[in-house]
Image (cartoon, rainbow, N blue to C red):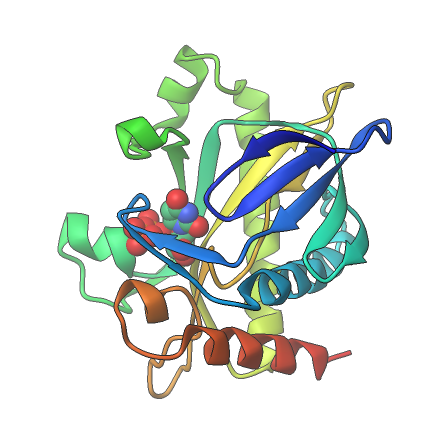
Length: 234
Ligand code: UDP
């Protein structure tokens, strides 16, 4: 099978099925633009399973997604899209780079949630970008950005409620979107504890990649617990 793209956490293969690709979730964890890297056997499986669960819930809520079907433990079939080179971040609580850049207290609530865009460019360190600069650089049209915002905030309503049901606070997360050949926008990439911050609302314990970023616990145990709680809702 032809490797179309290999990133830090996933590989995209083209196996010749028209309009689709195979998305393989790796066991690698990286942080700080891949300066920190480690293998966690079973992480790819957990992220794929969690992401499938969330994409299925979101599709049922009317969000168009790239997910087609599960192939096996680490692999999904997804619709083929051109990824829009913008990372869409939604924040319900201050954390991570927001705390570092703006000196905000961690856990400061945002009501309404913050909708932010970052340029997907590792060499530039994924800088934050305004909607206006995104239009000026032809990364997306004004209508597309408006559509991304509606999708991102609908995702927020659905996932905030889902995680609250299983005793977790969704502090922030990153989404990626892509365009199909006819120009339909689909939610793509993954939504997993690699791309979200999930906290115990009482103890502020993390169930996400901060376990690895900040060396504060067992990453696999945290991810397994997220999957266990989501599966209990079925
Ligand atoms: N995020 C991500 N990929 C990135 C940058 C951020 O998945 O390249 C996620 C991150 O896991 C967190 C949210 O987006 O859930 C906001 O991240 P932030 O801007 O605070 O940056 P970070 O702390 O990851 O440097």
